[in-house]
Each structure stands twice: as structure tokens, then as C-alpha cells.
Image 1: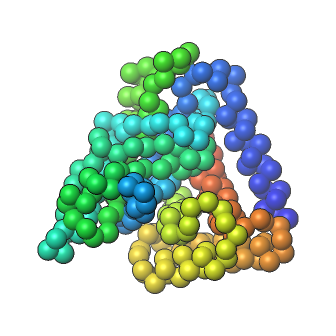
Image 2: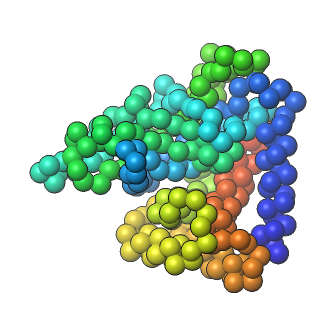
Length: 269
């Protein structure tokens, strides 16, 4: 029941932000990419290698992006591709200007993808992307934008204001760590929301077996609590699928952190 109530609250808030009175043709929010504590593995299918990455909104006053909104990296951003070369050694490639980036769920996540053919030029091993600290995403300007971002707005949002958001991330380490773990679980699940608890449990076991350190123990414990809560809610029938519950919990954590970011960005915050 708590999931359902909170879902209504979050959905209402996100819907309100999506339809702010600035006009649907106005440019959407600039987003902050969550720096990766560990490289995020890419899933390759049909010639494209991609993964989901966690984000937060840096502009409360602008509308949330619709799914599929194209984004580009700001000047202060960097993406590094790691791929195993023919000799088995790891090769690092700067792909900052080569990746395709699109929003997935409002301001809480984006998809970052690269052509598989480009990756295979460097090696046939598994590929992963690292996100540098202070990375931000700017919506690609549309021809009908009635209220586009100005150069000064972009500079301020991805510079001084982005530093404020980074400080909030560090202070909100439990939430941020849980987001990182849940993001890793989500990326190991099959595409879509098929009702297959076995696949979810397999993804969670794989993340645990990797023993990657994505943050303080409190964040790891929070993640375990969320997975357990989703199991209970699924058993009770209060959520449709285990994956939808985990995705919802990831986005809820992003929303909680976002409220702290927005407060800090306001005068006197």
C-alpha cells in the first residue's frame, strides 16, 4: 500500500513538472549525470550497445523531458569507454562526443548508446562506460523551441550550480549509493517489464557476486531493504512486476535527492 500511495505522490509531482506553464515547446530541463563509482557495462543487441544511467534535474522551473528526448553532454562532461582488446588488456577510449543520449523516465534516467561496430574495432570483450564527475546533459535544441536555453543559463547550470548539486550528492550518500546499486540491477534485467521474478533475482545475485563498491555500507543496506520490500509487494500483488517496483524505487530515490538539490539551488537554500 505504501508503494501505491507514494507512487501517486511521485507521479503527480512529475506530471506537474512535465506540464509547467512555460509551454510544451519550451526546452526541457538540463540534467546532471550521476558519476559512476564503477564503469557501467553496456548491453549489445541488434548492432547497438547501450545502458541506462541515473540522472537528476538541475532546473526545477523547466519542464521534465519526455521519453526519447535527445541530449548532448556539456563542455565539463566526459564519458570513457572501457573495452577488452585482442590481447585481453583494457583499452580506454574517450567517447564524449560519440554517444547517443536519450531520456527514459522524466529526469531520473537516460539511455547512453554506441554503435557495436565502433566498439568492436577496439576489441571483442565486454564494454563499459564511466561517467566523470560534474557531467551534465543539455537537451538538443529543437527548431520549434519557444524558450531555448541561453548560453549564460547553460554556463551557470552546468558550472556553479552543478557544483552545488555535486555537494548534495556527496551529503546524500545513502540515497546515491542505493541508486547506483539499483541502476546496476536494472541494467542486468531483460528489456521491458516482463513478469519474470527469476530474471530479477538472477540480476540481484549477479550484482552481489560482483562485490563492487559503489558507496558506503548504509547505501548497500538500503538497497537490500528495497529489494526485500519489492519482493513483499510483489507477493501481495500491490505491484505488477518486480522490475517495475525496482525501477519505481530507483526513481523515487532520485526524486528525494532532487528535492534536496532544488532546495539548495534556491536563494538562501
